[in-house]
Length: 162
Image (cartoon, rainbow, N blue to C red; front, side, top):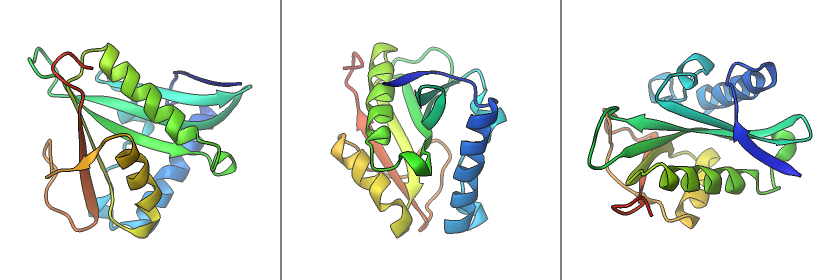
């Protein structure tokens, strides 16, 4: 059975998965276009981090970063560090993680979510995943700039988070 739970980005198996994630990002995008967070940043107070596991093995991870911490009438977040382990690809792990993150965002009262992903062919499956879940392309957000290597997407969760 696959379980999705809050987890620590500092666990050894998670750090390995995140290391592979960062290596792929740097292999497919120029350094200035890599916006993936390292384990320390994913452990920050404004980030919720989850892993998908089967038995004790990590299958994937994903995070939700609060944008503009503090009181806001329109709580917004950014999906970060979505990654499926190579051995688990094709099993729907990313879909499970994304659905979990969207449900948690709604439960926590988020009004809008954003994400940044690559424009290269390597990222086409990720873009299709997000589009299937209602995300649409948008302009840069939260300090990102125009970048031909990036695609920015957003999803309106509604005024009550749902």
